[in-house]
Length: 523
Image 1 (cartoon, rainbow, N blue to C red):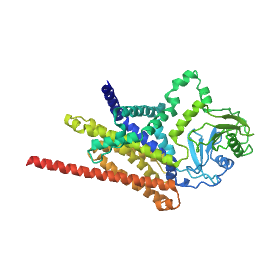
Image 2 (image 1 turned 180 degrees about the vertical axis):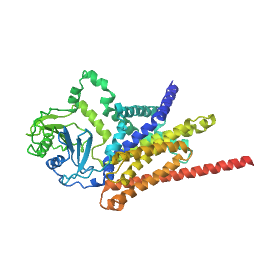
Image 3 (image 1 turned 45 degrees about the vertical axis):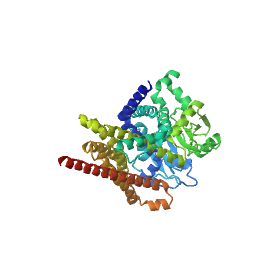
Image 4 (image 1 turned 90 degrees about the vertical axis):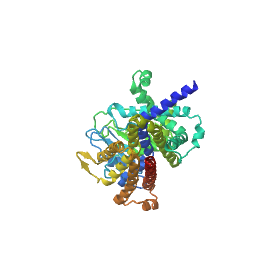
């Protein structure tokens, strides 16, 4: 009975990994990069490489600047205040066509910075992690949810089939043949990151419970979703009345005063998000949310003010059950400021990528000879998928960074703006790596590792050429977001180069052995 159960778990573990491993790797890779999404933003947006002033510009000053950008009649616009990781104001609003736009403002003066022409980390890499940029019928969210459920199955079944799970943690034999060494590394990274991978996967599903479990909400609230969101997330609404009034920070109440009142309400909590609803209307009101930079829980503490008088209209704090969901969301998103934990998340995220990749390698190498003898194409098909999914997405990501440094501000082609061109570079290069993997089955791993090595050196070199921010300068000046990005790119290039060199040596040794065998057979 036990043997049968373990065998069924082994079958489930194998085929869930083979079928959804490519999707899981893309999600893990982008999620790992998202740990430093704001640092990637600053590398890809040179004009935002600013120091956080001791006293950033006030909300009143920045709101006046925002009024120069936001189109008349906009239903709302918001400001994110500067932080250690993003030392500038971020303005978000809808343009006349209803498209969502963001701009950055100088933290010291509130001056509008030039449009950076890129989605960068927070606009491209982070959304890719949870939606794959597939918006039709929320397809991306559902695919990520399916991958998340598969990951939980893989983790549980992996524990079941590995009876010596703790011994596996201390066993790594890199000098053995590839199937054995890849399985050892798969087991090691799986055990090392098991608690992290389980929590990060489960919390990812819980974050989007309104998408994945909508029938529960509809059942409990009798299809009244408006009430559910009001009770859970604290939404407050007041309709515009169509009568003009002075905007906040003009002749209306002071936004800085409202922020101070909100901070007092939270007993010292810091405001980080401020939104103006119905600006210019007599019924305008202001929404201020509390920062969660100093706590794990992504709290929902919000205070609403009348824009004209500054009177408190409504305040909200999450109920206990919702606080649990927000705590798990905080564990997943790691928006709190803790550099040691952020690096631990990054390393464990990479370990998840290695675990998925080595699982594929073990499957491939353990079946290669059998499939070749039987004339089956399964290994070649899966190998092409694996190469494109693993080294291919890394090459595509580096092409995204390189395109960012090569394309001038304001660049356009075939009606596509600069940000879209960067995305084109990513997707076109990624597709090309799959084609290359299937066209060069014996050399694709090695050649794409060489591509990663070259691109990993090229990206920081272009950053130096286009901005003047070379490593000696950024390290000397203590500009660690830029220095860290360059150092990680160079470290990745070194690892990829070493891997390509070893693969080349292994291939040469295998060729020599084949020639010797053929010669001996001829004699």
